[in-house]
Image 1 (cartoon, rainbow, N blue to C red):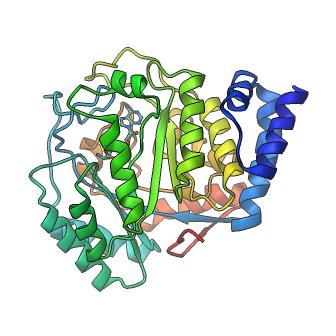
Image 2 (image 1 turned 90 degrees about the vertical axis):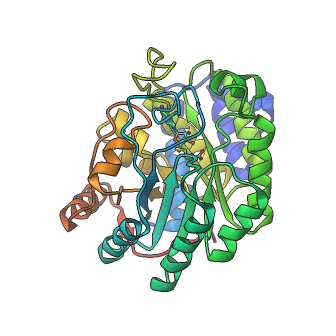
Length: 347
Ligand code: SAH
């Protein structure tokens, strides 16, 4: 216990650990170590962000996907999905409503949909930036060529989310079919970084076959790559996927990892994700108290949110009215935090 606490102190000072040290920390995780970590990680977040929480409006633009990731509910091989693609008009309507509610970042996320032309998405980004000059646009539409990423960037996209999913190659291959490649995923992240995006990567916690060694590799990769954002959330099985019977990731491990990520980089944009809020009723607040500083409420139309089912039991907590955001405000106020109306760029 003394050694593990000393490693947390060391992480706070030097921001890095070795693989052996990460493994030691993960292997010795327990309740009292977690509480020690959270008191430090929470303070680290507060030293940069005070009691501010940034909000990002998530718009799920399409659930068509050409990929067949074993964990994901909208995989190509799931015939039970009601497929949809939002029109430009529908996306802009989400933005208008979101802007009125105080959102200053819109996250356009979707499956890898060959029917959603890259030029059309670039055009939509251009219009959003024209209509709302003081908002940031984040894209999360998977793997594209460097040229396409460049086109999106030139259209005005500020940020890009592409989780590496897992850094250990053999583990990557156990989560994805052969048509997908670990190298390509990492190359995409390098391309995004070189184009000047604020880049977010990340992984699922407790995905099938994940070991502490996988997690140590993930943390080492994040140390080296130094992204501006990291998205992590528990794996949650979806009943119509090959991983239907696999157990979900745990709240405790997810919170622990949020804590260490915060200590690795106090300025990191670190969301308490929807998946975290799905496995625990107070997941969002617990994430903030472990060091997260971002939440991503859903701005999608109800039919989209309901059919963008990456995992089971995803709740529709839509932002169709001002009440929903008031509820989030109240939940945050109870733990001493407040929503900051701001683009919330990486500093
Ligand atoms: N197509 C885009 C967006 C993917 S969805 C892309 O490739 O980046 C966003 C994230 O949801 C994924 O990166 C994955 O980490 C997560 N996800 C997918 N299925 C999940 C599941 N069953 N449980 C928890 N998270 C999941």
